[in-house]
Length: 409
Image 1: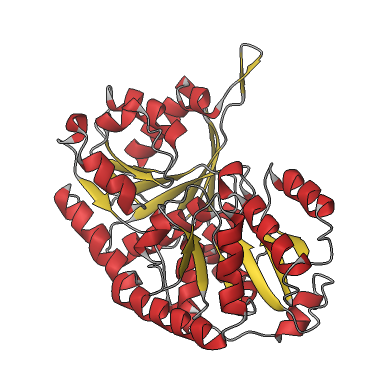
Image 2: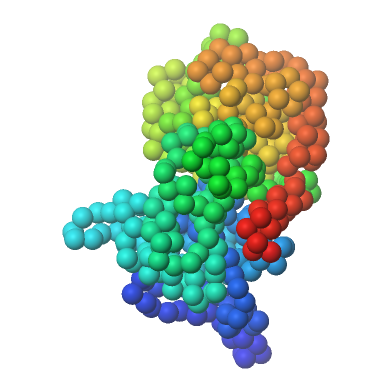
Protein backbone atom coordinates (compact mmCIF):
# COMPACT_ATOMS: atom_id res chain seq x y z
CA UNK A 1 0.00 0.00 0.00
CA UNK A 2 2.81 2.42 0.87
CA UNK A 3 4.57 1.74 -2.42
CA UNK A 4 1.37 2.49 -4.38
CA UNK A 5 0.96 5.85 -2.69
CA UNK A 6 4.52 6.80 -3.51
CA UNK A 7 4.13 5.65 -7.10
CA UNK A 8 1.14 7.88 -7.82
CA UNK A 9 2.53 10.99 -6.16
CA UNK A 10 5.91 11.27 -7.82
CA UNK A 11 6.92 14.91 -7.92
CA UNK A 12 10.16 16.13 -9.46
CA UNK A 13 11.81 19.08 -7.75
CA UNK A 14 14.86 20.65 -9.27
CA UNK A 15 16.74 23.82 -8.56
CA UNK A 16 18.41 25.54 -11.47
CA UNK A 17 19.83 28.96 -12.23
CA UNK A 18 16.30 30.10 -13.01
CA UNK A 19 14.66 29.10 -9.75
CA UNK A 20 12.65 26.20 -8.37
CA UNK A 21 10.44 24.25 -10.75
CA UNK A 22 7.92 21.66 -9.73
CA UNK A 23 6.49 19.17 -12.20
CA UNK A 24 4.03 16.48 -11.10
CA UNK A 25 4.66 13.34 -13.11
CA UNK A 26 2.24 10.51 -13.71
CA UNK A 27 3.51 6.98 -14.17
CA UNK A 28 3.73 7.35 -17.97
CA UNK A 29 5.35 10.82 -17.93
CA UNK A 30 8.45 10.19 -15.85
CA UNK A 31 10.61 10.68 -18.95
CA UNK A 32 9.98 13.39 -21.52
CA UNK A 33 10.07 11.37 -24.74
CA UNK A 34 7.11 13.16 -26.34
CA UNK A 35 6.98 16.54 -28.00
CA UNK A 36 4.99 18.97 -25.87
CA UNK A 37 3.44 22.42 -26.29
CA UNK A 38 3.95 25.04 -23.58
CA UNK A 39 1.23 27.35 -22.24
CA UNK A 40 2.50 30.42 -20.41
CA UNK A 41 0.18 31.31 -17.53
CA UNK A 42 2.21 33.81 -15.51
CA UNK A 43 -0.75 35.85 -14.25
CA UNK A 44 -1.28 36.00 -10.50
CA UNK A 45 -4.87 37.22 -10.89
CA UNK A 46 -7.94 35.03 -10.38
CA UNK A 47 -9.63 36.09 -13.57
CA UNK A 48 -10.46 35.32 -17.17
CA UNK A 49 -6.89 34.76 -18.39
CA UNK A 50 -6.33 32.10 -15.75
CA UNK A 51 -9.57 30.36 -16.73
CA UNK A 52 -8.64 30.59 -20.42
CA UNK A 53 -5.24 29.00 -19.86
CA UNK A 54 -6.65 25.96 -18.07
CA UNK A 55 -9.57 25.56 -20.48
CA UNK A 56 -7.05 25.74 -23.33
CA UNK A 57 -4.99 23.08 -21.55
CA UNK A 58 -8.03 20.77 -21.44
CA UNK A 59 -8.79 21.31 -25.12
CA UNK A 60 -5.17 20.63 -26.10
CA UNK A 61 -5.23 17.47 -24.00
CA UNK A 62 -8.31 16.33 -25.93
CA UNK A 63 -6.39 16.97 -29.17
CA UNK A 64 -3.42 14.92 -27.85
CA UNK A 65 -1.08 17.90 -28.13
CA UNK A 66 0.66 17.12 -24.82
CA UNK A 67 0.37 20.57 -23.22
CA UNK A 68 2.50 21.67 -20.28
CA UNK A 69 1.32 24.74 -18.39
CA UNK A 70 3.83 27.13 -16.84
CA UNK A 71 2.39 28.89 -13.80
CA UNK A 72 3.69 31.69 -11.61
CA UNK A 73 4.99 30.30 -8.31
CA UNK A 74 3.08 33.07 -6.51
CA UNK A 75 -0.26 32.12 -8.09
CA UNK A 76 -2.00 29.89 -5.53
CA UNK A 77 -5.21 29.68 -7.55
CA UNK A 78 -3.28 28.48 -10.61
CA UNK A 79 -1.56 25.80 -8.52
CA UNK A 80 -4.94 24.73 -7.15
CA UNK A 81 -6.43 24.47 -10.65
CA UNK A 82 -3.41 22.53 -11.93
CA UNK A 83 -3.69 19.96 -9.16
CA UNK A 84 -7.46 19.79 -9.51
CA UNK A 85 -7.27 18.59 -13.11
CA UNK A 86 -4.02 16.67 -12.64
CA UNK A 87 -2.29 18.89 -15.19
CA UNK A 88 1.31 18.70 -16.28
CA UNK A 89 2.70 21.95 -14.92
CA UNK A 90 5.90 23.75 -14.07
CA UNK A 91 6.18 26.51 -11.50
CA UNK A 92 8.24 29.50 -12.51
CA UNK A 93 9.55 32.01 -10.00
CA UNK A 94 10.06 35.35 -11.77
CA UNK A 95 13.05 37.46 -10.87
CA UNK A 96 11.82 40.58 -9.06
CA UNK A 97 14.98 42.61 -8.49
CA UNK A 98 18.17 43.19 -10.50
CA UNK A 99 20.99 45.59 -9.63
CA UNK A 100 18.93 46.66 -6.59
CA UNK A 101 16.11 47.85 -8.86
CA UNK A 102 12.61 46.43 -8.88
CA UNK A 103 11.78 44.99 -12.28
CA UNK A 104 8.55 45.46 -14.20
CA UNK A 105 6.90 42.33 -15.57
CA UNK A 106 8.28 43.13 -19.02
CA UNK A 107 11.80 43.65 -17.70
CA UNK A 108 11.57 40.34 -15.81
CA UNK A 109 10.64 38.55 -19.05
CA UNK A 110 13.56 40.18 -20.83
CA UNK A 111 16.00 38.90 -18.22
CA UNK A 112 18.48 36.09 -18.78
CA UNK A 113 16.70 34.36 -15.91
CA UNK A 114 13.49 34.04 -17.98
CA UNK A 115 15.32 33.33 -21.22
CA UNK A 116 17.29 30.46 -19.69
CA UNK A 117 14.16 29.05 -18.06
CA UNK A 118 12.11 28.96 -21.28
CA UNK A 119 14.91 27.47 -23.34
CA UNK A 120 15.71 24.81 -20.74
CA UNK A 121 12.06 23.80 -20.36
CA UNK A 122 11.59 23.77 -24.14
CA UNK A 123 14.55 21.45 -24.52
CA UNK A 124 13.46 19.22 -21.66
CA UNK A 125 9.92 18.83 -23.04
CA UNK A 126 10.93 18.90 -26.70
CA UNK A 127 8.63 21.89 -27.12
CA UNK A 128 8.63 23.77 -30.42
CA UNK A 129 5.64 25.99 -29.70
CA UNK A 130 4.57 28.21 -26.82
CA UNK A 131 1.20 29.87 -26.15
CA UNK A 132 1.63 33.36 -24.65
CA UNK A 133 -1.22 35.20 -22.95
CA UNK A 134 0.08 38.52 -21.60
CA UNK A 135 1.58 41.46 -23.53
CA UNK A 136 4.57 41.74 -21.22
CA UNK A 137 5.60 38.16 -22.07
CA UNK A 138 6.14 39.02 -25.73
CA UNK A 139 9.39 41.05 -25.67
CA UNK A 140 11.15 38.25 -23.80
CA UNK A 141 9.76 35.56 -26.10
CA UNK A 142 10.70 37.62 -29.17
CA UNK A 143 14.24 37.83 -27.82
CA UNK A 144 14.32 34.06 -27.25
CA UNK A 145 13.01 33.36 -30.74
CA UNK A 146 16.06 35.09 -32.24
CA UNK A 147 18.38 32.50 -30.72
CA UNK A 148 16.17 29.45 -30.23
CA UNK A 149 13.77 27.75 -32.68
CA UNK A 150 10.35 28.07 -31.09
CA UNK A 151 7.02 29.22 -32.51
CA UNK A 152 4.82 31.68 -30.62
CA UNK A 153 1.02 31.83 -30.54
CA UNK A 154 -0.19 34.93 -28.73
CA UNK A 155 -3.72 35.31 -27.41
CA UNK A 156 -5.00 38.90 -27.15
CA UNK A 157 -7.44 38.90 -24.26
CA UNK A 158 -8.42 42.56 -24.13
CA UNK A 159 -9.81 45.15 -26.49
CA UNK A 160 -7.65 48.20 -25.72
CA UNK A 161 -5.94 48.05 -29.12
CA UNK A 162 -2.62 49.04 -27.59
CA UNK A 163 -0.83 45.98 -28.90
CA UNK A 164 2.93 45.89 -28.90
CA UNK A 165 5.13 45.79 -31.98
CA UNK A 166 6.32 42.34 -30.87
CA UNK A 167 3.16 40.69 -32.17
CA UNK A 168 4.69 40.96 -35.66
CA UNK A 169 7.20 38.30 -34.53
CA UNK A 170 4.47 35.85 -33.54
CA UNK A 171 3.63 32.84 -35.70
CA UNK A 172 -0.11 33.12 -35.04
CA UNK A 173 -2.46 35.39 -33.15
CA UNK A 174 -5.64 34.36 -31.34
CA UNK A 175 -8.10 37.15 -30.50
CA UNK A 176 -10.92 36.69 -28.03
CA UNK A 177 -12.60 39.74 -29.59
CA UNK A 178 -14.05 39.74 -33.11
CA UNK A 179 -13.47 43.52 -33.19
CA UNK A 180 -9.75 43.03 -32.51
CA UNK A 181 -9.60 40.25 -35.10
CA UNK A 182 -11.04 42.48 -37.83
CA UNK A 183 -8.67 45.35 -37.01
CA UNK A 184 -5.55 43.18 -37.01
CA UNK A 185 -6.46 41.46 -40.26
CA UNK A 186 -6.47 44.89 -41.92
CA UNK A 187 -3.01 45.77 -40.57
CA UNK A 188 -0.53 45.61 -43.50
CA UNK A 189 2.38 44.69 -41.21
CA UNK A 190 0.54 41.56 -40.00
CA UNK A 191 -0.64 40.11 -43.31
CA UNK A 192 1.94 37.31 -43.03
CA UNK A 193 0.54 36.08 -39.71
CA UNK A 194 -2.50 33.78 -39.37
CA UNK A 195 -5.04 35.60 -37.16
CA UNK A 196 -7.98 33.77 -35.59
CA UNK A 197 -11.08 34.84 -33.71
CA UNK A 198 -11.21 32.41 -30.80
CA UNK A 199 -13.69 33.20 -28.02
CA UNK A 200 -12.67 32.20 -24.50
CA UNK A 201 -12.21 28.47 -24.07
CA UNK A 202 -15.39 27.31 -22.40
CA UNK A 203 -16.82 23.98 -21.26
CA UNK A 204 -20.55 24.55 -21.18
CA UNK A 205 -21.44 21.08 -19.88
CA UNK A 206 -20.43 21.82 -16.29
CA UNK A 207 -22.88 24.75 -16.34
CA UNK A 208 -25.66 22.96 -18.21
CA UNK A 209 -25.51 20.15 -15.65
CA UNK A 210 -25.09 22.38 -12.62
CA UNK A 211 -27.26 21.81 -9.55
CA UNK A 212 -26.85 24.21 -6.61
CA UNK A 213 -26.26 22.86 -3.11
CA UNK A 214 -28.10 25.74 -1.40
CA UNK A 215 -31.12 27.88 -2.19
CA UNK A 216 -30.86 31.53 -3.14
CA UNK A 217 -31.52 32.90 0.34
CA UNK A 218 -29.00 30.58 1.98
CA UNK A 219 -26.35 31.32 -0.62
CA UNK A 220 -26.39 35.07 -0.03
CA UNK A 221 -26.72 34.58 3.72
CA UNK A 222 -23.14 33.28 3.51
CA UNK A 223 -22.17 36.86 2.71
CA UNK A 224 -24.43 38.23 5.49
CA UNK A 225 -26.84 39.60 2.89
CA UNK A 226 -30.58 39.42 3.37
CA UNK A 227 -32.35 39.65 0.03
CA UNK A 228 -35.82 40.64 1.29
CA UNK A 229 -37.47 39.59 -1.99
CA UNK A 230 -35.21 41.81 -4.08
CA UNK A 231 -34.00 40.88 -7.55
CA UNK A 232 -30.25 40.33 -7.69
CA UNK A 233 -28.14 42.07 -10.34
CA UNK A 234 -24.55 40.82 -10.48
CA UNK A 235 -21.34 42.05 -12.09
CA UNK A 236 -18.84 39.13 -11.98
CA UNK A 237 -15.68 41.11 -12.71
CA UNK A 238 -12.52 42.27 -10.98
CA UNK A 239 -12.13 45.96 -10.21
CA UNK A 240 -10.10 47.78 -12.86
CA UNK A 241 -10.90 51.21 -14.34
CA UNK A 242 -11.96 49.74 -17.71
CA UNK A 243 -14.49 47.47 -15.96
CA UNK A 244 -16.52 50.59 -15.18
CA UNK A 245 -18.52 49.28 -12.19
CA UNK A 246 -19.19 52.91 -11.21
CA UNK A 247 -21.70 53.26 -14.06
CA UNK A 248 -23.77 50.42 -12.58
CA UNK A 249 -23.65 52.01 -9.14
CA UNK A 250 -24.91 55.29 -10.64
CA UNK A 251 -27.67 53.41 -12.45
CA UNK A 252 -28.70 51.76 -9.20
CA UNK A 253 -28.89 55.19 -7.57
CA UNK A 254 -31.65 56.10 -10.04
CA UNK A 255 -33.45 52.78 -9.68
CA UNK A 256 -33.42 52.77 -5.87
CA UNK A 257 -33.91 56.41 -4.97
CA UNK A 258 -36.11 57.54 -7.87
CA UNK A 259 -37.89 54.49 -9.27
CA UNK A 260 -38.03 52.60 -5.94
CA UNK A 261 -37.42 49.21 -7.59
CA UNK A 262 -36.79 46.15 -5.37
CA UNK A 263 -33.28 45.30 -6.58
CA UNK A 264 -29.74 45.03 -5.28
CA UNK A 265 -26.31 44.86 -6.90
CA UNK A 266 -23.61 42.26 -6.20
CA UNK A 267 -20.04 43.15 -7.17
CA UNK A 268 -17.82 40.07 -7.21
CA UNK A 269 -14.06 40.36 -7.51
CA UNK A 270 -11.12 42.38 -6.32
CA UNK A 271 -8.74 44.99 -7.76
CA UNK A 272 -7.31 48.44 -7.27
CA UNK A 273 -10.41 50.41 -8.31
CA UNK A 274 -12.58 48.73 -5.67
CA UNK A 275 -11.97 51.58 -3.19
CA UNK A 276 -13.29 54.10 -5.73
CA UNK A 277 -16.51 52.10 -6.01
CA UNK A 278 -16.82 51.83 -2.24
CA UNK A 279 -16.54 55.61 -1.89
CA UNK A 280 -19.21 56.12 -4.56
CA UNK A 281 -21.58 53.68 -2.82
CA UNK A 282 -21.12 55.59 0.43
CA UNK A 283 -21.63 58.96 -1.29
CA UNK A 284 -24.88 57.81 -2.94
CA UNK A 285 -26.18 56.18 0.25
CA UNK A 286 -26.38 52.74 -1.33
CA UNK A 287 -24.66 50.67 1.35
CA UNK A 288 -27.81 48.58 1.88
CA UNK A 289 -28.21 47.96 -1.84
CA UNK A 290 -24.71 47.40 -3.26
CA UNK A 291 -22.62 44.55 -1.87
CA UNK A 292 -18.92 43.81 -2.34
CA UNK A 293 -18.49 40.04 -2.28
CA UNK A 294 -14.74 39.82 -2.89
CA UNK A 295 -13.40 36.79 -4.72
CA UNK A 296 -16.14 34.18 -5.10
CA UNK A 297 -14.81 30.68 -5.67
CA UNK A 298 -18.25 29.21 -6.33
CA UNK A 299 -18.98 31.33 -9.40
CA UNK A 300 -21.55 28.85 -10.71
CA UNK A 301 -23.74 29.31 -7.64
CA UNK A 302 -23.35 33.09 -7.76
CA UNK A 303 -24.50 33.24 -11.38
CA UNK A 304 -27.23 30.67 -10.81
CA UNK A 305 -28.75 32.61 -7.90
CA UNK A 306 -28.52 35.98 -9.70
CA UNK A 307 -31.53 37.30 -11.62
CA UNK A 308 -29.68 39.63 -14.02
CA UNK A 309 -26.05 39.55 -15.14
CA UNK A 310 -24.38 42.83 -16.12
CA UNK A 311 -21.18 43.58 -17.97
CA UNK A 312 -20.43 47.29 -17.50
CA UNK A 313 -17.01 47.47 -19.19
CA UNK A 314 -15.80 50.32 -21.35
CA UNK A 315 -13.55 47.73 -23.03
CA UNK A 316 -14.14 44.00 -23.14
CA UNK A 317 -12.76 41.37 -25.47
CA UNK A 318 -15.58 38.89 -24.91
CA UNK A 319 -16.16 37.95 -21.23
CA UNK A 320 -16.18 34.30 -20.29
CA UNK A 321 -18.56 35.18 -17.45
CA UNK A 322 -21.25 36.03 -20.00
CA UNK A 323 -20.81 32.64 -21.66
CA UNK A 324 -21.21 31.02 -18.26
CA UNK A 325 -24.29 33.11 -17.53
CA UNK A 326 -25.82 32.22 -20.90
CA UNK A 327 -25.36 28.52 -20.17
CA UNK A 328 -27.36 29.03 -16.96
CA UNK A 329 -30.07 30.91 -18.89
CA UNK A 330 -29.55 34.25 -17.21
CA UNK A 331 -30.71 37.52 -18.83
CA UNK A 332 -27.69 39.67 -19.71
CA UNK A 333 -27.00 43.39 -20.10
CA UNK A 334 -23.80 44.47 -21.86
CA UNK A 335 -22.29 47.58 -23.48
CA UNK A 336 -22.41 48.50 -27.16
CA UNK A 337 -19.20 48.46 -29.22
CA UNK A 338 -17.27 45.84 -27.26
CA UNK A 339 -16.36 42.23 -27.89
CA UNK A 340 -19.37 41.15 -25.83
CA UNK A 341 -21.52 41.95 -28.87
CA UNK A 342 -20.39 38.68 -30.47
CA UNK A 343 -22.74 37.05 -27.96
CA UNK A 344 -25.15 39.82 -26.96
CA UNK A 345 -27.31 41.17 -29.79
CA UNK A 346 -29.57 44.03 -28.71
CA UNK A 347 -33.16 42.90 -28.08
CA UNK A 348 -32.29 39.45 -29.46
CA UNK A 349 -29.96 37.77 -26.97
CA UNK A 350 -29.83 40.53 -24.36
CA UNK A 351 -30.01 44.28 -23.82
CA UNK A 352 -27.25 46.76 -24.73
CA UNK A 353 -26.40 50.21 -23.42
CA UNK A 354 -23.71 52.82 -24.08
CA UNK A 355 -21.05 52.37 -21.38
CA UNK A 356 -20.95 56.07 -20.49
CA UNK A 357 -24.72 56.35 -19.98
CA UNK A 358 -25.95 55.38 -16.51
CA UNK A 359 -29.50 56.27 -17.53
CA UNK A 360 -29.43 53.74 -20.39
CA UNK A 361 -28.17 51.00 -18.07
CA UNK A 362 -30.88 51.94 -15.56
CA UNK A 363 -33.51 51.62 -18.30
CA UNK A 364 -32.21 48.15 -19.23
CA UNK A 365 -32.27 46.96 -15.63
CA UNK A 366 -35.76 48.41 -15.15
CA UNK A 367 -37.01 46.70 -18.31
CA UNK A 368 -35.84 43.32 -17.01
CA UNK A 369 -37.03 43.99 -13.47
CA UNK A 370 -40.55 44.88 -14.55
CA UNK A 371 -40.96 42.22 -17.25
CA UNK A 372 -40.26 38.59 -16.37
CA UNK A 373 -41.39 37.49 -19.84
CA UNK A 374 -38.67 39.68 -21.40
CA UNK A 375 -36.08 38.29 -18.98
CA UNK A 376 -36.95 34.71 -19.83
CA UNK A 377 -37.10 35.37 -23.58
CA UNK A 378 -33.67 37.05 -23.73
CA UNK A 379 -32.14 34.39 -21.48
CA UNK A 380 -33.44 31.51 -23.60
CA UNK A 381 -32.44 33.11 -26.91
CA UNK A 382 -28.95 33.87 -25.60
CA UNK A 383 -28.67 30.31 -24.30
CA UNK A 384 -29.62 28.91 -27.72
CA UNK A 385 -27.23 31.27 -29.52
CA UNK A 386 -24.37 30.20 -27.25
CA UNK A 387 -25.05 26.51 -27.89
CA UNK A 388 -25.01 27.11 -31.63
CA UNK A 389 -21.80 29.14 -31.68
CA UNK A 390 -19.61 29.05 -28.56
CA UNK A 391 -19.42 25.56 -27.12
CA UNK A 392 -16.50 23.34 -26.18
CA UNK A 393 -16.88 21.58 -29.54
CA UNK A 394 -16.51 24.90 -31.36
CA UNK A 395 -13.37 25.72 -29.37
CA UNK A 396 -11.98 22.26 -30.02
CA UNK A 397 -12.39 22.70 -33.78
CA UNK A 398 -10.96 26.22 -33.68
CA UNK A 399 -7.87 25.15 -31.73
CA UNK A 400 -7.38 22.18 -34.05
CA UNK A 401 -7.55 24.49 -37.07
CA UNK A 402 -4.89 26.81 -35.59
CA UNK A 403 -2.47 23.98 -34.92
CA UNK A 404 -3.07 22.41 -38.30
CA UNK A 405 -2.24 25.78 -39.85
CA UNK A 406 1.04 25.83 -37.91
CA UNK A 407 1.60 22.13 -38.70
CA UNK A 408 1.80 21.17 -35.03
CA UNK A 409 -0.85 18.49 -35.59
